[in-house]
Image (cartoon, rainbow, N blue to C red; front, side, top):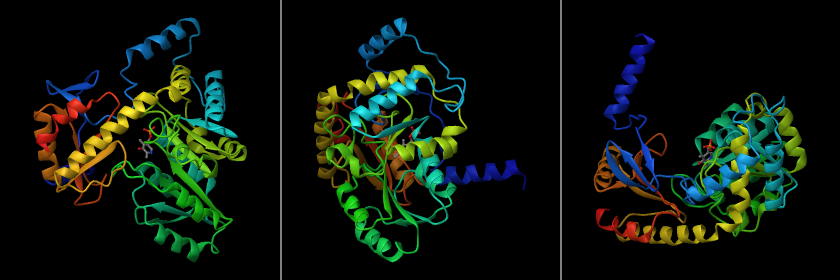
Length: 383
Ligand SMILES: *Cc1c(COP(=O)(O)O)cnc(C)c1O
């Protein structure tokens, strides 16, 4: 069988299992998307605060760029000539908001998660990762020299046993978790994790706040802010591509970690830095982040409302956030439900294996502050 024949037969198998993916043709129009000529309310967006479609913010930023322009390319890695002042300004803003010793910006969450663990782990490191962490973290773990064990999702009793069993066998242990999980929308108990870590002097905590940054906490800094434990997390990572309506990612950490990553992190060193204009846009929005309190309140209200609808219809919904799964089971059934919702004007997408475990295919609703209770009411009879 040739390479092309093998690929063709794998695609055929994916298609037969209802798991074939393709890139959709999609036009954005405010809160709506137009797909296949049909206009639908976008219930699959990561624009959690509704900032990406805000014309007022875009205009204000463009006015700023008219007098203080930034380049559209950095033309280089940050270690060569790509370290524009926009980067320093953004990292200063992060340090100020998080009241942190150091911050470092990366090209994306994928770069962050595939670069940090390989940089900091040796073969004497053990990584203990939640079973449901994002693919980018799994890839980072695989690229690292560390040994790893995945504990059952949010099963802290199992995690505690693993720590007891292994803490003497490794120089360091790093616990890896998300704060809000991408697919179930449930949250990690960060204070409990910090308690577990503090019982040993060689255990560290890595938290990915991709879905919580912007959304949770008084100033929108994430679950760690909401739970008042920002300073007890060793590697506090978040992304700018979701609620912050930009692109890139950050780590909040000690200065020694920042210095070390600059010397050892391959996905920082060997890639062209983000365009300064994007970094300036991130900084512009980041400085406004504490002011988006109304957006965070609205999102919370509509999340509670949709969760109640899902449960009323008899589905188990583990979520306590703005990401709300409607867990259906078979991929083909999830596709059917998604198609039916789309027909009625709701752009909800099925999520299937390998993104979620076999037998838990689902519709993943992700709400934004721009979606109203009124719109969600119309969804109710369709579930
Ligand atoms: C989206 C996401 C990422 C990747 O971030 P990008 O900036 O889109 O590369 C990483 N971790 C989690 C948990 C995510 O949901």
